[in-house]
Length: 207
Image (cartoon, rainbow, N blue to C red; front, side, top):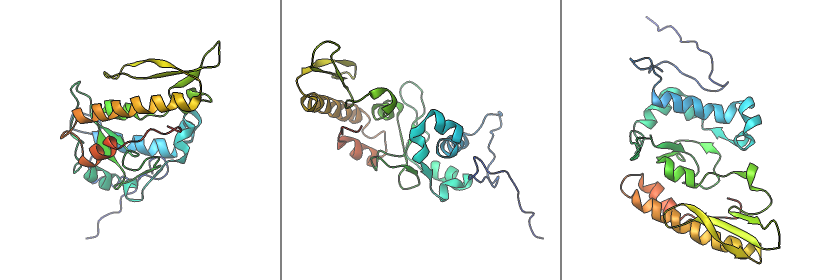
């Protein structure tokens, strides 16, 4: 006897759930992997969201990741998927640590990392203005002010400089040092690929 074909509405126009796995758990809440899958598809293919967050308009999902069954099974094999940080927060899905600037969510580019590490690398082009990350010009005067993480990760005033280049060089040095320090605290608790990429992370003017 042939199985009846399952018909379902595509999620955000591209995602297919063949219902091999239930989207909801016994307590009625959505499975973590399902929420991640829907959120990933929304970021890449929701036009209303792109109006609010234009940077996501260039993002895409691999053909394999468009299938919930495949994505769920991939999640359950990944280091960090089931882990939480010291504050009880789940590790987050990241697509551009292994390949900087990557725009494709795929089984080869995605990893799970703690929220604290993910937050370090979030770009904010909308509020940056005309100067590189971490830098703004004095309201009165011609010098450039730098705010960067201190040894504890707190964003603090780090001096004023005559040129943008000098200011960014200082910011870059301090930010990279903080990334390495924080990453070191997660050694053995994150995917080795993530650890290596973050320990070698280079802060760029476009970050």
